[in-house]
Length: 196
Ligand code: UDP
Image (spheres, rainbow, N blue to C red):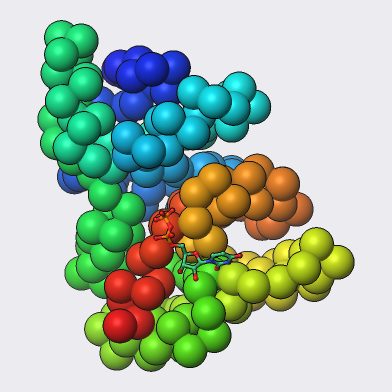
């Protein structure tokens, strides 16, 4: 595949449009997929944590979520076409599914309750054909099973986890196999952006 290594993290050299197409294909291909958007800070975290680096490099898609990553890739002579941030990527996927009337069930896990509810309200108004459900991102290790059950019961084909990096990526790794086929994306603080 067409990738560039930046300090041990393998980035996919995709445009926003290509990333959207991959995700809209994966949400209906019957298997599990993980998407990571990684900026310079996250690359540094991966440099300090080998298991995190392995986890990221096992993802189906890793996009350059920061101009520092775009510059670093260019300096290696293998530029990424553009910056692909988590917030923009996910909104564009929802927008495109909405335009194409492609069925989408989206579970949003993360943020504080008020922020999550405001986010769900805003997205339901903007994308009335898309099914949304969610849960806040504050739960104990003992509650993980009930969170997984809640997600399973909804059966999303797009699972957005906004609990901060690297917690959200580690959570996705731990639970993805227990869910129906879906695309899981770590979305950082996006829920607060959409809900605010
Ligand atoms: N968060 C969460 N559960 C936690 C810790 C954080 O749901 O246990 C949420 C927090 O409310 C915020 C997001 O995770 O919405 C973290 O956003 P931040 O911008 O710090 O993440 P980054 O984009 O840096 O990964």
